[in-house]
Length: 125
Image 1: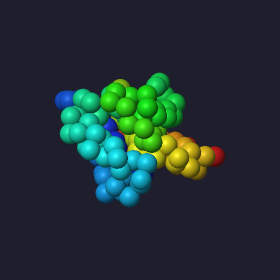
Image 2: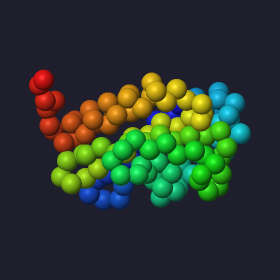
Image 3: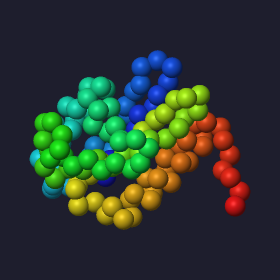
Image 4: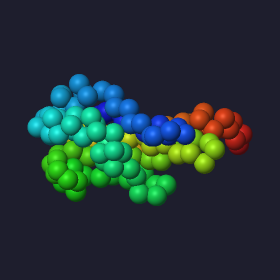
């Protein structure tokens, strides 16, 4: 899996893409690696690809994007960054990712990012 994150600042939002070499090791994704790299070379196209629906975890299959990328899936979640700003964290990999394990991790990471970015401390239970 690959992490992609969108960090929003007072200027134009920027997408950061890490771990492309891991995608080359996934047979389902490897054939679409060129398309993915091309999308992530265009900041606006990358933002559109990882943009979640609302404030919930969103899984987008590669078959549902243009250009179609069969075998690829993007799982993303928005986080609050403070000051009315938001960001997005996403995992990119095979559509056979272990979703039951990854979705809670993505929710946890987005919550922690939001806490760190907004300066809020974790609530004590």
